[in-house]
Image 1: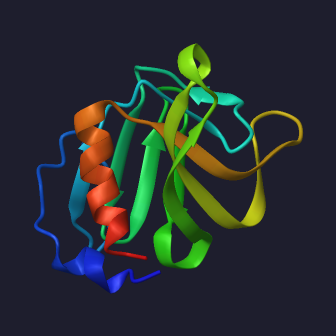
Image 2 (image 1 turned 90 degrees about the vertical axis):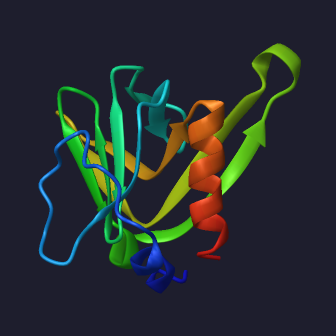
Length: 132
């Protein structure tokens, strides 16, 4: 993945007030209608907030914050579509390089599904298209 591209993008307003590291800038923010594990287990609903910086993806579901380092943890990001007609699902699949555990007990995930609204989906797709 060409993560150098992220450094060329303009900085946008940090509207969800995420804590930034030195050299980091916000390049995308959205309130998705939900996000889940790669297998579909719900992690956050429409009160969630997604921020992408030139280094990390931060997903806040209101009860916890999921932080993923793009260059170290992410293997792939792409638009996916599954199901048909009323069960059709369109999302961004973020695949991680290793299995992660979360929550109480041993719950595992290998990636995330971000369910963005149409405008935000197009903006996120434009970013990841240049990273391929």
